[in-house]
Image 1 (cartoon, rainbow, N blue to C red):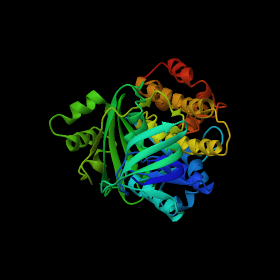
Image 2 (cartoon, rainbow, N blue to C red; image 1 turned 90 degrees about the horizontal axis):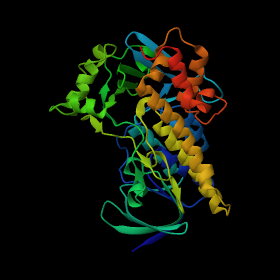
Image 3 (cartoon, rainbow, N blue to C red; image 1 turned 120 degrees about the vertical axis):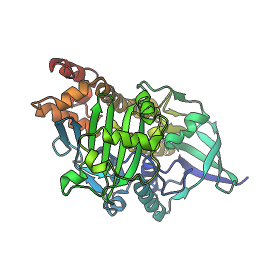
Image 4 (cartoon, rainbow, N blue to C red; image 1 turned 120 degrees about the horizontal axis):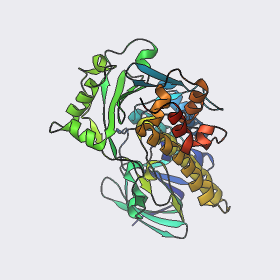
Amino acid sequence: MNVEEVDILIIGAGPSGCVAAGYLEQQGVRIKVIEKSKFPRLVVGESLIPRVMDHFKEAGLLPALEAQNFQKKPGARFIRGEVVSIFDFGDKFGEGWDWTWQVPRADFDYAMTQALQRRQVDIAFETTVSAIEFEGTNSLTTVQDKEGNRSQIKAKFVIDASGYGRVLPRLLRLDKPSALNPHSAIFSHVKDINRPEGIEGTQISFDVLDREVWLWVIPFSNGMTSLGIVAHTDFIEQLKGDDGTAKALERAIKLSDFYVKRFANAAFEFEPIHLKNYAAAVSKMFGDGFALTGNSAEFLDPVFSSGVCFATESGILSAKLAYRQLQGEKIDWQVEYADYMEYGISVFTTYVKEWYTGNLQTLFFHRPENLDVKRKICAVLAGYVWNKENPFVKKHDRVIRTLAYMLGGDK
């Protein structure tokens, strides 16, 4: 069996794997990326948040992405009945990017991999991992291409950015139940033929239909719009009934007073995809010779678009630490990686939980608005969840609940 030797093997060519590869290529590291899919491919995670822009810039991917003219996202809108709450990323607590993109992920991820291939990064598409063995920090990974040919890759470190494939959690039995309640989603794309002119037509929105039920609307620059319903898994199953996912999404759109006229008769571009009980977690985020990044480590909920942010944050951080380790430095992976990532995850976990309890919705929709509170929450929504100067980060575990109680709870 053919054996290839590299410094770092990256599993997965989504945003996490791409920023890791982009950073390591700039350092002159011998890397190989393996990806089970053929690109472009359809995947969820179309709403980015500003923090990711730091990672794309550091990985040298920003120019290639800017050339694609994706729809700019200057903020986000949350709708509940007649009350509308708009968060402007340019008006937030602390420093950071004040915009990002709304992207068809098929095009977005493809643009990144093409940019990396132009930089001579070796990406093997339609290649799967069947086994991996570790000896200290060194590993031997067995892979299989689309023709069924098997080969092996020796690496000094492995970054698992395999997303929902969760390659190492599956092979090393690292999965554990998520702490979040079971929620599911159904989504598709439509030709947005009734799109209004101006900001209204391009505004990303989250329409709250009930405390645990919301519709996402993500307009793209190519004239398409992503529509998705998110709810407790039981509600989604009831919405499906015996008619399937397409009818369920149609019914969800008709529940939205705000969007029913714009999308009620829209034809889906592909059979709506059902993501069931999507929250995931692992027992540990690293081990001798490997690190888990992005969805292969943890996925929370799409309500605040944190998925790609955690993917790129963990992707580029793991690449930096692995590179330093290759240079002979002793890395405390628990402190510098796991503890760091878990802090940001804990902040967003609080926000997700308090969204579904209704406490955060109280803060979003209470009138009159408290602009100081709004700016601090906006910094969290922008992905700056490691800035402990922000009390809505540092005291995340109690500040939302306390303020909601003072405002009289969810009414």
